[in-house]
View 1 (spheres, rainbow, N blue to C red):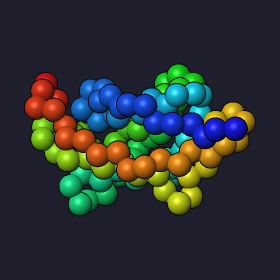
View 2 (view 1 turned 180 degrees about the vertical axis):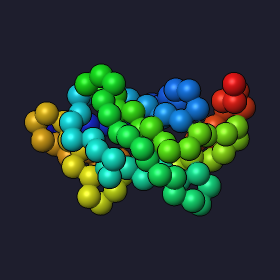
View 3 (view 1 turned 30 degrees about the horizontal axis):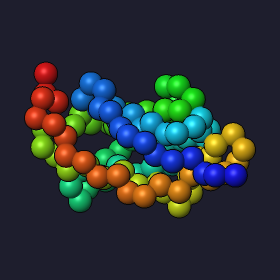
View 4 (view 1 turned 135 degrees about the vertical axis):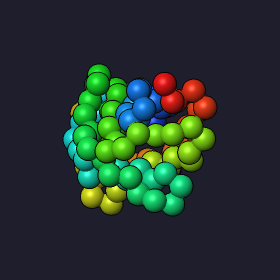
Length: 102
C-alpha cells in the first residue's frame, strides 16, 4: 500500500488554505499541521475535509500579500488514507499572491 501524496494547494478567501491529495484522507485535525508565516506559527482555528481528497486549514488570522507560508505535518498527526497508510508530508512553502487582499 502507498501513502497519500500531496498534489497542490489553493487559498480560499484570506484565511483558508486547502491541501489536495491524490486519494481520500482521514483524521485531519487541528493538531495535524503547523502553519508558519515567516518564522511565526499562526494559530489554526479549524481543520476540516472539503472533499475526500482535500483538507482545508482555516487560520485564526488572515493572510496578506507576499507573506511566505510554510505548512508542516506535526509529529502527532494521524492523517492517513482509508487503508491506514500514514501521510508523510514534506514541508510546503509558498508566497501569498499579491491579489489576496480584497
